[in-house]
Length: 260
Image 1 (cartoon, rainbow, N blue to C red):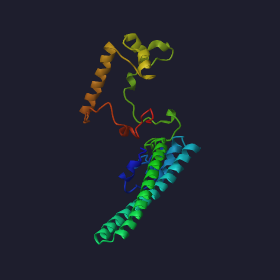
Image 2 (cartoon, rainbow, N blue to C red; image 1 turned 30 degrees about the vertical axis):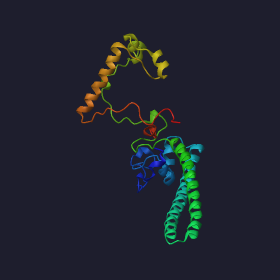
Image 3 (cartoon, rainbow, N blue to C red; image 1 turned 90 degrees about the vertical axis):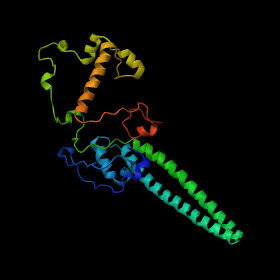
Image 4 (cartoon, rainbow, N blue to C red; image 1 turned 135 degrees about the horizontal axis):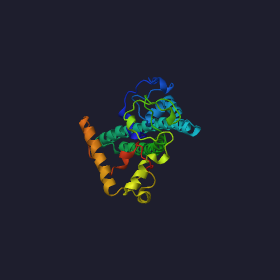
């Protein structure tokens, strides 16, 4: 998402049609699209419909969509200008070589000035393209991803559709009249078992993380192995990938911290 360098990946854009899911409330289908600058510039109505569905169609966000379109058109013009200058330089350079060979040094030197002028035009256009691409990337990365066509319209989790439930009969839920402490929450249960250190996790990583020790750490590792085995049995291919990745690999991912 949001990479200017991915503009040529999709040569022919799919037709924009309403999402097939009636619960999508008239939202345009995002099938075949990803949130990249080309899509924003060429399909602003598609982007706007998904921003509206996310309740994120404020004036500032819509202005960003419009601005991306303007910048992309300017970028295209600059690239044409740069390529034209480079082609002129190539043509003149070939002509200069022929003139020198034929002994017409004065004429060749005169063309050299035109080559230098073409170089300056190309370099200036290239610098402007780089500057525009930086702004385009920053604006595009600020836009949320498209919603899947299966996602129903709604403002919060209360509007979610339950697609499938299993194991509900095994849930431990206090019956009406029972004390709230009849069944413990996972954090309270972990605290009673020992080995859960929320203070350490807060110091290391902030909220919503955990530091586990002893039997709880072993249980977490066992659960991870159990689910990996279950997925392997279903035909998934297990992969082991590096924990450290390049900056470009994180572009367009739901990374919680923006990449400077």
